[in-house]
Length: 251
Image 1 (cartoon, helix red, strand yellow):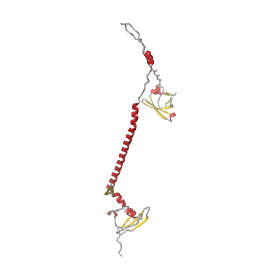
Image 2 (cartoon, rainbow, N blue to C red):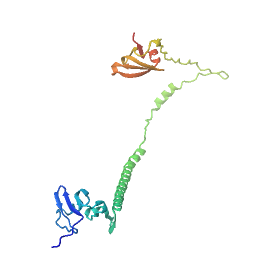
Image 3 (cartoon, rainbow, N blue to C red):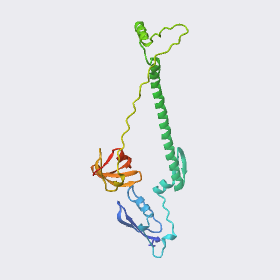
Image 4 (cartoon, one colour):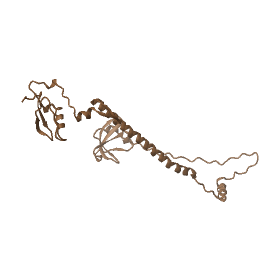
Protein backbone atom coordinates (compact mmCIF):
# COMPACT_ATOMS: atom_id res chain seq x y z
CA UNK A 1 0.00 0.00 0.00
CA UNK A 2 1.31 3.43 -0.95
CA UNK A 3 2.13 5.60 2.04
CA UNK A 4 0.08 8.75 2.43
CA UNK A 5 1.67 12.06 1.56
CA UNK A 6 2.90 13.74 4.70
CA UNK A 7 1.95 17.25 5.73
CA UNK A 8 4.27 20.09 6.66
CA UNK A 9 2.37 20.12 9.96
CA UNK A 10 3.30 16.91 11.72
CA UNK A 11 1.03 17.16 14.77
CA UNK A 12 -2.06 19.10 15.90
CA UNK A 13 -2.53 19.34 19.66
CA UNK A 14 -5.94 20.00 21.20
CA UNK A 15 -5.91 21.36 24.72
CA UNK A 16 -9.33 22.83 25.47
CA UNK A 17 -11.95 22.29 28.15
CA UNK A 18 -13.72 19.75 25.93
CA UNK A 19 -10.73 18.03 24.30
CA UNK A 20 -7.83 17.99 26.71
CA UNK A 21 -4.53 16.37 25.68
CA UNK A 22 -5.86 15.08 22.32
CA UNK A 23 -3.58 14.97 19.23
CA UNK A 24 -4.17 14.59 15.47
CA UNK A 25 -1.57 13.39 12.90
CA UNK A 26 -2.57 15.14 9.67
CA UNK A 27 -1.65 14.06 6.13
CA UNK A 28 -1.34 16.18 3.00
CA UNK A 29 -5.12 16.12 2.43
CA UNK A 30 -7.53 15.60 5.34
CA UNK A 31 -11.30 15.24 5.53
CA UNK A 32 -13.00 15.41 8.92
CA UNK A 33 -16.69 14.72 9.45
CA UNK A 34 -18.84 14.04 12.48
CA UNK A 35 -21.89 15.08 14.45
CA UNK A 36 -22.29 18.42 16.17
CA UNK A 37 -19.96 18.59 19.15
CA UNK A 38 -17.54 16.00 17.73
CA UNK A 39 -14.74 18.57 17.62
CA UNK A 40 -14.66 19.81 14.01
CA UNK A 41 -14.77 23.51 14.98
CA UNK A 42 -12.25 22.93 17.77
CA UNK A 43 -9.85 21.33 15.29
CA UNK A 44 -10.27 24.20 12.81
CA UNK A 45 -9.71 26.78 15.53
CA UNK A 46 -6.44 25.09 16.55
CA UNK A 47 -4.86 26.30 13.28
CA UNK A 48 -5.19 29.89 14.60
CA UNK A 49 -2.94 29.09 17.58
CA UNK A 50 0.74 28.44 16.73
CA UNK A 51 1.30 26.67 20.04
CA UNK A 52 -1.11 23.93 18.88
CA UNK A 53 0.92 23.09 15.76
CA UNK A 54 4.14 21.05 15.42
CA UNK A 55 5.83 21.67 12.06
CA UNK A 56 8.15 19.33 10.20
CA UNK A 57 11.88 19.69 10.78
CA UNK A 58 13.40 22.49 8.75
CA UNK A 59 10.10 24.18 8.00
CA UNK A 60 9.76 27.86 8.95
CA UNK A 61 6.10 28.60 9.84
CA UNK A 62 6.67 32.26 8.92
CA UNK A 63 6.95 31.22 5.27
CA UNK A 64 3.34 30.03 5.19
CA UNK A 65 -0.09 31.64 5.64
CA UNK A 66 -2.78 29.48 7.21
CA UNK A 67 -6.31 30.16 5.97
CA UNK A 68 -9.27 28.80 7.93
CA UNK A 69 -12.79 29.02 6.53
CA UNK A 70 -15.21 28.17 9.31
CA UNK A 71 -18.19 29.69 11.09
CA UNK A 72 -15.93 32.12 12.95
CA UNK A 73 -14.56 33.37 9.60
CA UNK A 74 -18.09 33.82 8.26
CA UNK A 75 -19.20 35.72 11.35
CA UNK A 76 -16.22 38.07 11.15
CA UNK A 77 -16.15 38.65 7.39
CA UNK A 78 -19.70 38.31 6.07
CA UNK A 79 -22.59 40.43 7.27
CA UNK A 80 -26.17 40.78 6.04
CA UNK A 81 -26.85 44.12 4.36
CA UNK A 82 -29.91 45.10 6.31
CA UNK A 83 -33.14 43.68 4.90
CA UNK A 84 -31.71 43.05 1.42
CA UNK A 85 -31.61 39.28 1.03
CA UNK A 86 -28.60 37.89 -0.82
CA UNK A 87 -26.55 41.07 -0.33
CA UNK A 88 -23.54 40.87 1.98
CA UNK A 89 -20.54 42.92 3.01
CA UNK A 90 -17.18 41.20 2.64
CA UNK A 91 -13.97 41.41 4.74
CA UNK A 92 -13.64 41.74 8.47
CA UNK A 93 -13.20 45.53 8.27
CA UNK A 94 -16.37 45.99 6.22
CA UNK A 95 -18.33 43.68 8.48
CA UNK A 96 -17.24 45.67 11.54
CA UNK A 97 -18.09 48.94 9.81
CA UNK A 98 -21.50 47.56 8.90
CA UNK A 99 -22.06 46.53 12.51
CA UNK A 100 -21.17 50.03 13.71
CA UNK A 101 -23.61 51.51 11.17
CA UNK A 102 -26.37 49.19 12.38
CA UNK A 103 -25.64 50.05 16.02
CA UNK A 104 -25.75 53.78 15.32
CA UNK A 105 -28.97 53.34 13.34
CA UNK A 106 -30.58 51.60 16.31
CA UNK A 107 -29.33 54.35 18.63
CA UNK A 108 -30.87 56.96 16.33
CA UNK A 109 -34.19 55.12 16.35
CA UNK A 110 -34.11 55.11 20.15
CA UNK A 111 -33.33 58.84 20.30
CA UNK A 112 -36.12 59.63 17.82
CA UNK A 113 -38.58 57.48 19.78
CA UNK A 114 -37.58 59.20 23.03
CA UNK A 115 -38.04 62.59 21.36
CA UNK A 116 -41.51 61.66 20.14
CA UNK A 117 -42.46 60.43 23.60
CA UNK A 118 -41.18 63.66 25.17
CA UNK A 119 -43.22 65.71 22.66
CA UNK A 120 -46.33 63.65 23.45
CA UNK A 121 -45.78 64.13 27.19
CA UNK A 122 -45.34 67.89 26.65
CA UNK A 123 -48.57 68.13 24.64
CA UNK A 124 -50.41 66.10 27.26
CA UNK A 125 -49.22 68.37 30.07
CA UNK A 126 -50.14 71.44 28.01
CA UNK A 127 -53.63 70.02 27.55
CA UNK A 128 -53.97 69.48 31.30
CA UNK A 129 -52.68 72.98 32.04
CA UNK A 130 -55.06 74.86 29.72
CA UNK A 131 -58.34 74.27 31.62
CA UNK A 132 -56.60 75.10 34.89
CA UNK A 133 -55.25 78.37 33.45
CA UNK A 134 -58.66 79.25 31.96
CA UNK A 135 -60.37 78.60 35.29
CA UNK A 136 -57.78 80.73 37.07
CA UNK A 137 -58.19 83.63 34.62
CA UNK A 138 -62.00 83.57 35.07
CA UNK A 139 -61.75 83.95 38.86
CA UNK A 140 -61.10 87.42 40.38
CA UNK A 141 -57.78 87.61 42.12
CA UNK A 142 -58.99 89.84 44.95
CA UNK A 143 -62.47 90.84 46.10
CA UNK A 144 -62.80 94.07 48.13
CA UNK A 145 -65.93 94.29 50.27
CA UNK A 146 -67.88 97.53 50.04
CA UNK A 147 -67.71 99.59 53.20
CA UNK A 148 -70.80 101.24 54.67
CA UNK A 149 -71.29 104.89 53.75
CA UNK A 150 -71.54 105.77 57.45
CA UNK A 151 -68.03 104.41 58.04
CA UNK A 152 -66.68 106.30 55.04
CA UNK A 153 -68.13 109.57 56.30
CA UNK A 154 -66.66 108.99 59.74
CA UNK A 155 -63.25 108.10 58.34
CA UNK A 156 -63.29 111.22 56.16
CA UNK A 157 -64.13 113.47 59.05
CA UNK A 158 -61.20 112.12 61.00
CA UNK A 159 -58.64 111.99 58.23
CA UNK A 160 -59.50 115.39 56.69
CA UNK A 161 -59.64 118.10 59.38
CA UNK A 162 -61.18 121.36 58.26
CA UNK A 163 -58.87 124.33 57.69
CA UNK A 164 -59.35 127.40 59.87
CA UNK A 165 -61.33 130.18 58.23
CA UNK A 166 -59.62 133.44 57.48
CA UNK A 167 -60.73 136.71 55.92
CA UNK A 168 -59.87 137.89 52.43
CA UNK A 169 -56.38 139.34 52.13
CA UNK A 170 -54.96 137.51 55.15
CA UNK A 171 -52.33 134.76 54.89
CA UNK A 172 -52.85 131.28 56.27
CA UNK A 173 -49.86 129.90 58.21
CA UNK A 174 -50.06 126.20 59.10
CA UNK A 175 -48.89 125.16 62.56
CA UNK A 176 -45.15 124.42 62.78
CA UNK A 177 -44.35 120.78 63.50
CA UNK A 178 -40.74 120.27 64.62
CA UNK A 179 -38.91 117.31 63.02
CA UNK A 180 -38.57 114.16 65.05
CA UNK A 181 -34.96 113.82 66.21
CA UNK A 182 -33.18 110.72 64.97
CA UNK A 183 -31.05 108.98 67.55
CA UNK A 184 -27.68 107.77 66.27
CA UNK A 185 -26.26 104.52 67.62
CA UNK A 186 -23.55 104.99 70.13
CA UNK A 187 -20.10 104.46 68.71
CA UNK A 188 -18.35 101.52 70.30
CA UNK A 189 -15.39 102.56 72.35
CA UNK A 190 -11.98 101.50 71.07
CA UNK A 191 -9.94 99.51 73.58
CA UNK A 192 -6.37 100.66 73.87
CA UNK A 193 -4.06 97.70 73.40
CA UNK A 194 -0.29 97.58 73.45
CA UNK A 195 0.21 95.66 70.22
CA UNK A 196 3.95 95.47 70.76
CA UNK A 197 3.36 92.75 73.36
CA UNK A 198 1.35 90.59 70.96
CA UNK A 199 3.50 88.06 69.18
CA UNK A 200 3.72 84.35 68.46
CA UNK A 201 2.97 82.40 71.64
CA UNK A 202 0.89 85.16 73.30
CA UNK A 203 -2.10 83.68 75.17
CA UNK A 204 -5.41 85.24 74.14
CA UNK A 205 -9.08 84.50 74.75
CA UNK A 206 -12.24 84.72 72.63
CA UNK A 207 -15.80 84.87 73.98
CA UNK A 208 -16.98 81.99 71.80
CA UNK A 209 -13.81 80.00 71.04
CA UNK A 210 -12.23 80.17 74.49
CA UNK A 211 -8.51 80.35 75.15
CA UNK A 212 -5.91 80.08 72.41
CA UNK A 213 -2.45 81.24 71.47
CA UNK A 214 -1.09 83.38 68.66
CA UNK A 215 0.54 81.41 65.84
CA UNK A 216 1.79 84.42 63.92
CA UNK A 217 1.03 87.89 62.59
CA UNK A 218 0.99 88.55 58.85
CA UNK A 219 0.53 92.29 58.27
CA UNK A 220 -3.08 93.09 59.16
CA UNK A 221 -3.96 89.46 60.01
CA UNK A 222 -3.32 87.60 63.25
CA UNK A 223 -3.60 83.80 63.30
CA UNK A 224 -4.77 82.17 66.55
CA UNK A 225 -5.03 78.45 67.35
CA UNK A 226 -7.78 77.45 69.81
CA UNK A 227 -7.53 74.26 71.86
CA UNK A 228 -11.31 74.20 72.33
CA UNK A 229 -11.71 73.90 68.53
CA UNK A 230 -9.39 70.93 68.25
CA UNK A 231 -6.36 73.19 67.63
CA UNK A 232 -8.13 74.73 64.64
CA UNK A 233 -6.67 78.02 63.40
CA UNK A 234 -8.74 81.20 63.08
CA UNK A 235 -7.79 84.49 61.37
CA UNK A 236 -8.67 87.95 62.72
CA UNK A 237 -7.99 91.55 61.73
CA UNK A 238 -4.99 93.00 63.51
CA UNK A 239 -5.08 95.02 65.65
CA UNK A 240 -8.85 95.62 65.11
CA UNK A 241 -9.88 92.34 66.77
CA UNK A 242 -8.15 93.42 70.02
CA UNK A 243 -9.32 97.07 69.86
CA UNK A 244 -12.96 96.01 69.36
CA UNK A 245 -12.84 93.43 72.14
CA UNK A 246 -13.16 90.26 70.06
CA UNK A 247 -9.78 89.05 71.33
CA UNK A 248 -8.30 89.72 74.76
CA UNK A 249 -4.69 89.29 75.85
CA UNK A 250 -4.45 87.07 78.92
CA UNK A 251 -1.98 88.40 81.50
